[in-house]
Image 1 (spheres, rainbow, N blue to C red):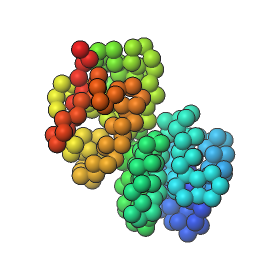
Image 2: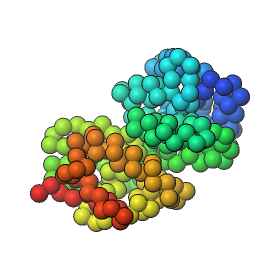
Image 3: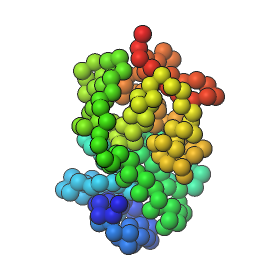
Image 4: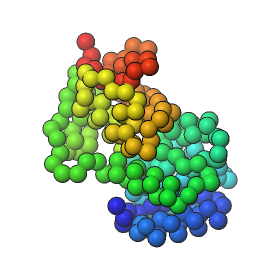
Length: 230
C-alpha cells in the first residue's frame, strides 16, 4: 500500500504535523499545504495520488478546493470535518469527495481511511474482467472508461467502483450494507449517508433521473439495482 504521494491540507499546524508524521511513518510520501491557494499550487505543480483536505480553510476553503480539483482530476479526496458537521459532510461528498474523517481522529482511523480509498482507486488486482454493457451504458475495466450512448463519463474512483459493483450484478437487488461492504469495506457498514450521496453523484453524471430512473433503481427499504433501459 505504501509509497503513494499524498497532499495534506490543513491550516492548523498541529493537525498538519500529525497527519504528515503518521502518513510518513506508514511509508507514504507527503506534501503539505496550509491554505487552499497553496494546496492548488502544490497539486498543479506535482499531482498527488490522494488529498487529505480540511474543509475549513481561510481564503479558498476546502469545498472550493475539492470542486476545482474534481473539475480536472479524479484524484481521490478525503475531507476532514468538524464533529457533528453533518451538512459539511454532505456538501463535501456532493462536490466529489470520496470519504471523510471527523476531527479529532486517531492515527489508526486516518490510516485505515487512506488505505481504503487508495485500494478503491487502484481497483481489483489480477486479470481484468470483460467490458460490461447494459443498454447504452458501457464500462471498460481495462481503461476504467465509462460511456453512455458514446459520451465519456468521468467518474471518481469510488463512483467507478460503485457503478462496477451494480453493473456486475445487473438485474439483482443489492442491499445498502452489501454495497457499502463491497465498495467501501466492512468498516463502513451502516454508513448510509456516504452511499446515498455517492449514488446521487453517480446518477447526476449518468443523467439518470431518480424520479424516472433509466439505470439505477431504488427499492425503498431494500436497496438498489442496475437495470437495462426499456
